[in-house]
Image: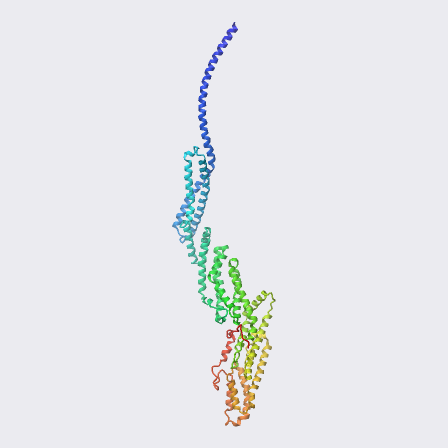
Length: 616
């Protein structure tokens, strides 16, 4: 019974506990419903936050880069604006170095600003694209997209600043124009402004203005060079010479002037321009210097020399060509130093062409001289005064000139070059042999002239004059050194031989004449126009004539003085008046004076040897 009571109490207790548990479960259900409602709201909030976080993760890197650059863009924009104001308000003439620095900084700042904008714009465009793609995202609805678009527009305007600066009338274009003007001013002034000119050139070249800068430089410096050369008086370079003209129209001083003026142009005008150009443009100066030289008028020097080389082939032309070559040889090292490289190829080619013309022309004339002398046209009729032919005076004088140190050394060099071009061996004996050939040709020509006289007496007098001149006026000269003493002696012997023939063919025949007076007068008239240039020779022959005539006259006619026309004194006086420039006895006037003829020995233009002689 006790056990039942205990079981009843236990059951009753469990029932109470169950009631309490049922009540607690009812309360928990209500709480779970409320919690479930709260979790749904939390899920919605978390979903929104997740979307925002996802978008933020996508745009955070581009935004971070853009924000990082924005500060640099702002500072650079402020700097560029300040530099622009400085450029607009300043001038290079008042402070070149500061102005150059401002131009440099403006260009660099613009490039940095444009570079920053070019970096920032793609990143912002990426943000814009992401925002537009996720248009349902709350971030896009919060005005972010609009702000990004405005910022992109602003960056585009900033980036366009560089284009505005470089447009016509823009700040940098105007600044560079001012620098070009300052460059022209400096170039027209003192050449000591090299540092400033070099700095301007560098700045202009750095901004794609090199060609414009070079054009200004070439125009101004070439005008200076032209003016410097024109002050020398170069009108003679325009002397018209064609191939048929004689070089007699080229004055003797012209080649000397040409040489001095070319040397002045190379050593002073072009040397200064070369050094100035090299200091300003440094490595890339050759082409600019070549343009200056070409525009300064160097071609006129080449053209003048070429026209001389093209002139009619004459002996005088040989000397002129040698003078031209000597000038070119003297300036050879200067030419090689100043006009080297591809940029000066045209000047190099012109120089080579001129040297080729000069060398070939000089050698051609020199080798033809013996033939031209031998075939030189004979005077018709032969000269009545039997004087020394101008050809003999010219040839001996010309050879002596040619043998002078300057001409001879130049001729040796020219012939050596010519032989080298022909791959032939050169020997100095070639020249001395050719001088021998020239003088031999002269002797043949003189013999041909002597044969042209009908009267053997006049022929003898002609050969007396010629042989006396060749022996007397070549003695002690360089021509004598070449020809040798035996050659001089031979002509002296020839002169004595023709003196003997002259006496025999004229005065010694008087003894066979029946009428001495008529025969004597006839001989005197025939010989009245004869001119013996050498005073000593004239005295010798007069004495020989007196020795042949007076004894005969006295022997035959001394006792008939009253009945004859001549007295011994008059005969002597008439004989001593022979061979004079003027003869009062027979009225032979206007004869060429001996002194005038002799003076032509040193004048190589007395009678040039033509290249197209007519054979006798």
